[in-house]
Image (cartoon, rainbow, N blue to C red):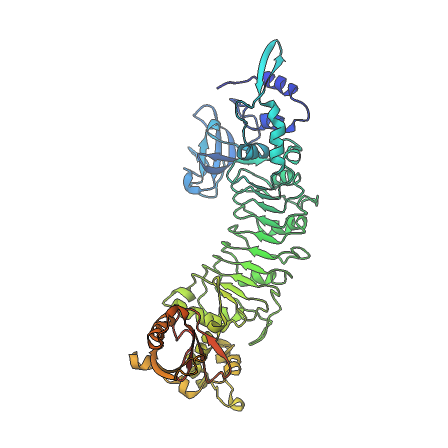
Length: 560
């Protein structure tokens, strides 16, 4: 390897034009200038060793061995060997008993500056034939340089960048002053996740040179945040999306920094052990999405502190351990004033085991999308389709469940089935077909707050609908149906008995043989005497007659 003395490097730097900030920064900060001794203040610096990240907690001699050692605390505590102690002496402290190691400085990567990382990833190197050689005199020696003329071309390439991903590129800071603004000022979306940034101040030095920055991802950087409120410099005035997953930020630090993010619309705070201790006041007023996934300390009382963010449309609470929610300002059948704009809620991978949680969500005035996967309520000895129907019936305004749209006919079927499934319980609780006598007790209404509304919508369940389920036999599952062909006036009405478990595809196969019409040309729908004048399309060939709530006496309509 060719090594330059410091004097030689200074002479080379003097020959570079003063306006060529990027090349100067590249030479000084890219790691080309090495030293056998570590003279920088390394305490608290983020480092990388063989792909693992750590924080320097100690620098010095560790007797009886000679030479300099770095004491590091690993992000992955299983990577270390001890807690920062050696032979009874405590050199530094770790959060975990096996979180620490001593490493020689030459084994550690302290990273590169921002511009070096950008050039390593985005600059297209000139071929040898395109390089132009120049000669400069250093002292009394003639030194040949290659590629100085490519600086302008590189700057042209980088100045066009608007989306930059430097994930896992060992970025440790901004580098030379003004270099980023000169070289790549048009960056709008920047991914700096899993790098070696150690403080929020370093982030500011980078972002302050990117006036158009509106999306910034800083995930997996263990950042030290300011001890006091940072000055409002306008650095993040245009930023709309900020990702701070696994950065170690606290809720107090969020509220401390957030006045500097006036336009913020999306904030991601996954896996930071956040405890919401304070209500946001006059901040986060533009926020539309908040991700609190993986923060196991979150509970319903903390959620009430963020319940009045006026524009919050999406709230992600996956893997927080939440098990209950109750909106005390809203009674049965009423809407809460909390989360007034919330449209999309994610509560996957939690401890939700009671239907009361789902009932409460019906109180949210704007909710139309819910994701509720891998909870005890949905996983333990439950048929997935049945659970889906029960959730749909309990949340009246829901349009999407677990990322699957809820068609009109599915909602109708779910609500009719719900009305029948709990009809006997409703009658025992004081329910009655006569509206003047229909007074179910408070316990039933609390468990089934939408039941009375469904009775108004479809009529109170009749005694014939509420017969005790007979043991499973095919004859108990057969539906007596009429089959009409509205567009074929000469076709007689047919009567058939079909299993309620029969799929629409099989019904079409049967009708194809009866009517001598290809399956691909058949269109099915049905009418019910309970809903005169309304026709329900049977559009999904994989669903069953039961799914569409087809009942005895209904009429299948066949067109081609």
